[in-house]
Length: 266
Image 1: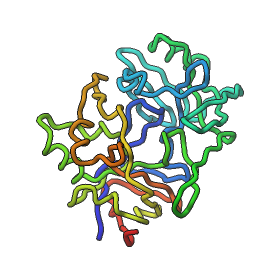
Image 2 (image 1 turned 135 degrees about the vertical axis):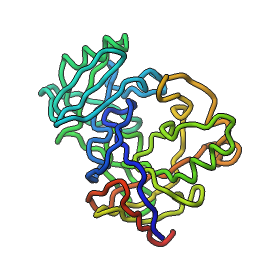
Image 3 (image 1 turned 45 degrees about the horizontal axis):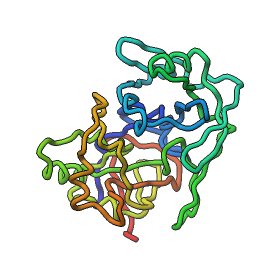
Image 4 (image 1 turned 180 degrees about the vertical axis):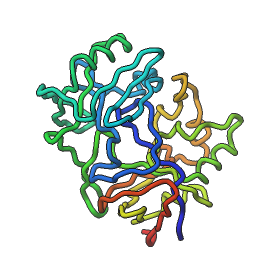
């Protein structure tokens, strides 16, 4: 059975806004330029919307080899390969790895807008991070994302949720990378290996969701939904699942409108 890609979103800086793309390269650690940068505190700990919901209001765009970040009426930009020689040891959950500081100017800009001492770091050739899996391929390299290289979400899953909601939510609450047109809610949970364009991917498991889904990605306002509604039908072992975690089997590329070819279910 074939499905169609309806949107591709990358989040260059972890926990900041996403960018919709018409096409994308797929690397071993996920979609190109997805979660490649990250804000850290003075202890090298990653910063996210869990503690800093206002990060949602920092908008990012890509233009001619530059990453542009906008907040309120201010803006800063830098080349994608910009970094100093300063090495920063950072933590992402249970992972510890080395990164490079982007620049003192960029860090100061973010610090001023967040009223906290922060640094922006970049994954470079010194940055190695991998995750062990309980199923083949048993190991995956990963970017600065929370745990897996890619998150996929079917449109039928979102439609089914919004049918249960008094006020429908935007799909951006779930910060997925690949949105696929589907017919049955949560059928993406049951996919095993699948291909899009020249890339081969694999669903590892449904994605456990956190409080970030309750943050309005336009205003940074915090609420109770969608976790309140999802808990009535998507809760298992005290976790709430929505969308699916995906790893890369073979690098490649694909675009919006490409067909998704799924393999046999596990």
